[in-house]
Image 1 (cartoon, rainbow, N blue to C red):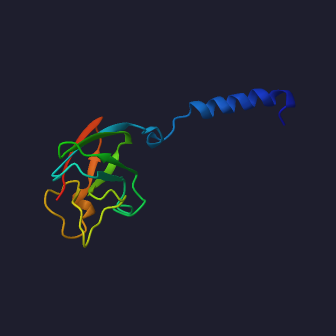
Image 2 (cartoon, helix red, strand yellow; image 1 turned 180 degrees about the vertical axis):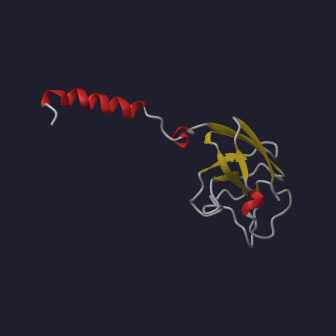
Image 3 (cartoon, helix red, strand yellow; image 1 turned 30 degrees about the vertical axis):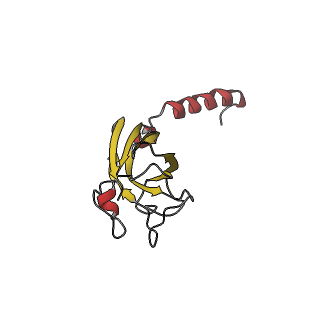
Amino acid sequence: MLNKKYWPFLFTIVLLFLTLAPLPSYSWSTEKGQIKITITGFKSDKGKVRYGLFNSKKTFLKKNHAFRKGALPINNNKSEFIIDNVPYGEYTFAVGHDLNDNGKIERFFQREPSGVSNYNKKLYWWPNYEKAKFVLDIKSKTIEIKVF
């Protein structure tokens, strides 16, 4: 048995070893980038553009499940903004023109214009996640979306 006076020394050695031991690389993958978004196709500057950035197929277009979301003004029938500190990964982006500024995008009877990443036509049905997804794996990625 080890003498009690050596326990602090042994503890320090073990702690030092654990601190310096290599960890799996995924625990260090903290690279982040930014997404520059340009949204066009607005017929007026009335209301706001509401957006959602989704980070999985499971949460895609689900209410209150966006990784990042917000509402911004429209200027000259266009909206441009940047989302910073986004971890590298797979994402989808959805926008809608909240014409009546009621905090939601009407999809049916009084349909408000909307758009999704990688779609360049009017949406008549729910968009496909696989088609809408994009990968952020560089420091700055530009996404252009047109609302219809």
